[in-house]
Image (tube, rainbow, N blue to C red):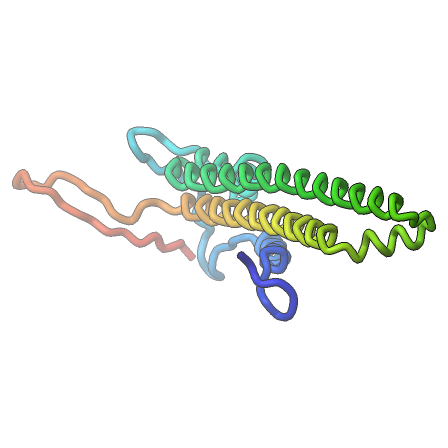
Length: 206
């Protein structure tokens, strides 16, 4: 599923790079432009409800603890549900891969035991010769290859899960900062019974 070795991008390398970007992002919080006053956090009304003011760090930490929590606290329920479904699916694949890994481990032990009993029946008793015979058996090598593949799949799914949790945290972090600005589009009844649309751009005082 993912490239291994060489210079390919694996989920583990992507996660490490994303962590570095997050550290820089958290170390440099959003600040107003020089010469402009900071825009105070405001609540935005959506679906007849008022969203509470949430800091970017708070939304980020909520999403790390429970995927989708930060989005739900901001009122972005659809996006929060998306991250819940994706992370739940990855968790199920992790459990499935772990079960397959256990089966592969049992297969290796079974085949090694069969080869050892066969060699002992042939009169091989030296421990070094037994180990060499077991290691050279094709059936054992095939089972060990399957076990290594299952371990790689588990690592990939774990890294993929971490990657999506971090993406959800960054998304919630950005959404929280966007909620600090008022909605620029306004709708009001017109003088002649029509509808007036207004667009506003906040400009800080000097």
